[in-house]
Image (cartoon, rainbow, N blue to C red; front, side):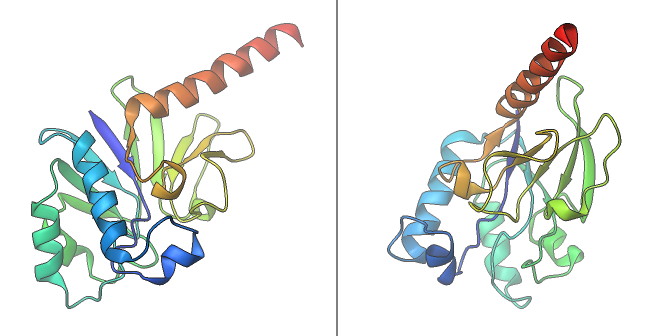
Length: 184
C-alpha cells in the first residue's frame, strides 16, 4: 500500500492554535498523529511525507533517527518549508530518499506529482497532484480542475491518506468530467 501525509509539525506548539488543532499540547498532538499513522501503515508499505514533519532544528538528527525507525513503512520525503536538516541528514535519519518535488505512479498507474507547496506544481494536461502546506485553510480537494489533493493531516483527521483514497477522489473527478463531456 502507498500512503501520503504532510504537515505533522511535531514539536511546534503554535500549530495547535494556528490550525485550531484539537489538542492541549504538542505531546497529545504527537501521540495522536503517531498513533493514527501506526494504526494504518504496515512495515512493507511506502509512505510519502510531503513536508513539514517537524520544526526541530538541524541538530536533531538523533531525535529524527529514533522517530523514523519507530515508524513502520519505507519512507520518502518531499521537503517542506519548515524542514531544517539537509537532504543527506534526512536520509541518514531513515528516509529512503529526499526530494523537492517528485512524480510517482500509483499501483493503478495514475501519474501523481508530489510537492509540499502547491504553488510550485508544474502541470501538463494529464497531471494530478498531492500537496501539503495549506493545512486546513483549503479543503481536501483543490485546484482549478479539482486535481490537487491536500494530504495534510489537518483535513484528514490526523491520519495518512491511502492510495485507494487518492484513486477514489481522482477517479470520481474523471467520471464526472467524462459525464459532462458526453452531454455537452
